[in-house]
Image (cartoon, rainbow, N blue to C red; front, side):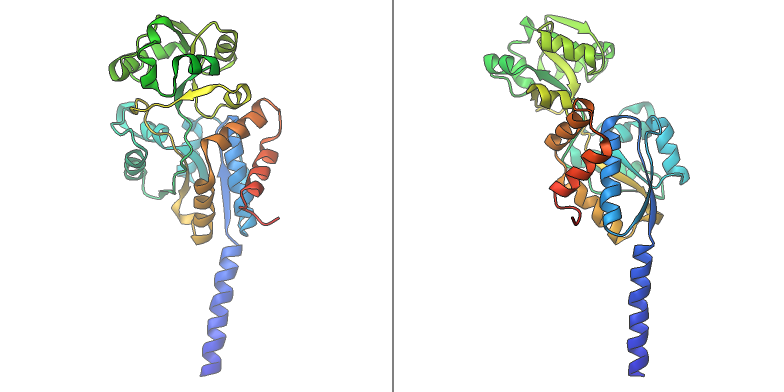
Length: 292
């Protein structure tokens, strides 16, 4: 009987190990560089933990990729808490602003069968950016600091910044910021970058993790009163593919990911023209997430 118990115990341990090693997932992404980097990071770490990974990347916008997740065409997707919550909310409006509240509401909004894992501290959200000499001259660190000097400044950003509640209207209502002039440009793209670099504008609406910010040494101002909802990076997955190994790997990635990391990786891809897969592989090794 004792021999039988030992044999059964050994068989169960072998079965568990075999199940873990046989796990297979499909990692997907939308169609911009940061998503490609993140999806490759997920794949690198999961493969190192013995999970078989298929990558289906650069699939398109959230309107394409989220239905692919719910239908089971992909299993794991890097997401942004505020944007996904807005996508799932009627009218696209969400009352929450702080990271914990946004994540909690998102967990409640997700349909059965999808699971939100641990969000990273890293966020990719709309922000205001200035050149270092502007920040030094006016002692600028936060949006609030702009209120006293914005009347002499030109701000540039996408056309919708003029009408959105998180744009000029919100900056006035929440912070008392009123710029001398608004210049409609693009959404953090080359037109906005060129205008800030050349001094045609004083303040630019950009995204916190853009690689060009790191490359130029520009200053990201802190949204200290939470005008923009939190946009923490977070893995979203189909619950049926998750096990302790996969959950642990994805949560460990989130625990190590910072805004600065994303800026540097986006710079490596967008400016230095490196491959997202190579940049992802380097990051996971630098952070000790895989065995060399």
